[in-house]
Image (cartoon, rainbow, N blue to C red):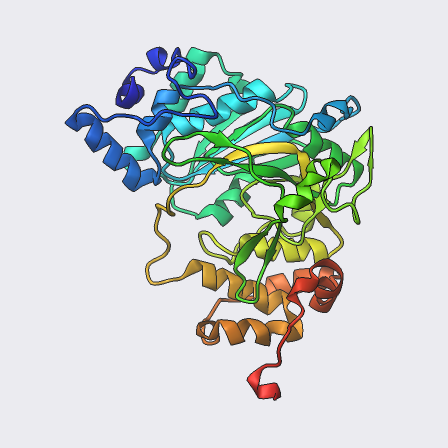
Length: 413
């Protein structure tokens, strides 16, 4: 099988992950036996920034033990009435990675909650076009093709605009955005939908577990919240190990803001979301202005959206009972616009709209942003006014006190 996957999907569909020695704990490294495999391996490294041979060897699906804390088993989700559209944008993704992701969703998501999976190819390179191969495998595997929307863009949009285009195709009550290199685990979707059903202005994140880019083994990540600094760089905020010596902290982080009973577990409050994986009420997504279409390709969109949610009446939580594995690639394998730092460009747009008088702290740490032209912000500023959003000072005082400036700037001394 291995590098012949794209030519023999019917055979590859029968590959057993356990027989391949690729269980979720101790995946075996792949040995390259000939020049053909070596060429394929190097191509995968260039295009995807992970070991495509290792991914192919695992096969189209693999068993994963429940990753949630045992208390989560006692939670009831019988009254969920919402359906979800899973939105997946991909640009140059390995066929085996995306197939295994789709299988994990179909295998571990109750059909009554799954409205559809929206697959949106954001103009992958010619040697990475897999749309027809996905359909071919879906016919072999007998996927419910009536629940799979499979579209390809005729131009490169970038993640931000592509997600907006794909969301327009969705019809579920809830949009669940997932990066295109994930694997969901047992009972992953129920906590997300239940939490949104209780409050449609909650944006809910799963705990993001780790998939190794070379061995493809799956490992649990520590439950953490997310923040950013004055450079607008995203940060994971972890706890010391002894914090988890108290059993309840393993399923109920941040007791000061979360209340737990046997039939209700609300996720932890977090100032930021990572951006790759989250669930949001579809109508609320559009009411809040979706993504800033003035942003370019990738970077900073998660910070902007997080600020908008908190400042304009919503909230963001991580639900400890929902866990999704994410393949953390060795690098970002695709290019941005020529000559443009898209992450800086996008964060400047966010700062200009949301930071009010605190913009100076951002520019003090990113002086290269001062002269950057980031286009017209009129629409986003009008949205801010329309939504009746709070000032950024409120965010610092109520949501993320760690951002409180600790030193005076030179012009204030």
